[in-house]
Image 1 (tube, rainbow, N blue to C red):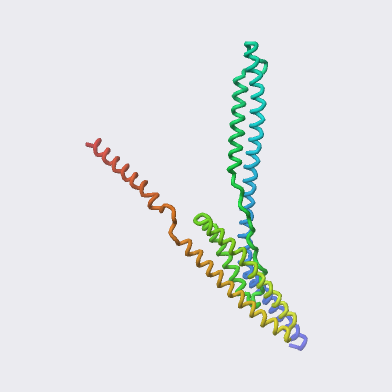
Image 2: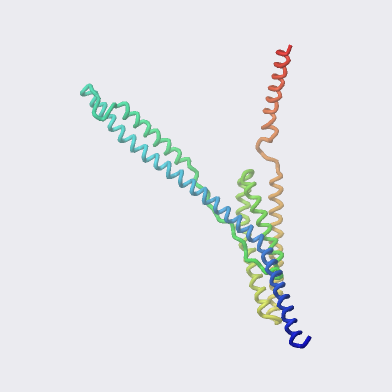
Length: 281
């Protein structure tokens, strides 16, 4: 094999290696972005759920407003026509051209009741609470960047925390609200640390071997330590949330709810058996 052939073969091998490395790098990047997509999906679901609640509230409010206005109008018009009919019947001893007075007065009563009921329902209509959209995911660091492991850990912890909140909403709404507030306040500073790590990683790669690159490496390690401390705080929050889920429920237990039904079914079964024995005898 001549020198040109060897060089061509080496070039082909090198190109294959580079393609393989590109595939591996793309796979690693996609794997690292998976928790980020999960966190963004949870955020979009929370926003969509709030929007549905707002639309439901607005439709209900519009319906009650329409009923109030329509009922008031019907009560006013029908009451006026009914009064005219009553006067006509009293003065002429015959029904007026508008029809029987009782029909119009009945319509006025129905309209008034509808308007009053709708107005009372509108007063008790609960406005959706103020909504703060969950904080979105931070930028995704390269898999071999300083702090990449801590960044992925933070995202996974936030995903787990977001998964606990709906369950806490049903059991302890106040605690769920506090948990949302804690995540809303704590995640932006930690995401800012990840953004710094991303910037420092680009500096390290762009500057090459130099004192500035060494300084960027040192700074990235310091930022990584702060991010690690934040992850530990999130782990403590997650542990406390799990403990709260295991705490006793202040409402009636399942046994208290189901025991009367069990006793009633047992008594019913016993009664059927006695009846069968009586008729069989």
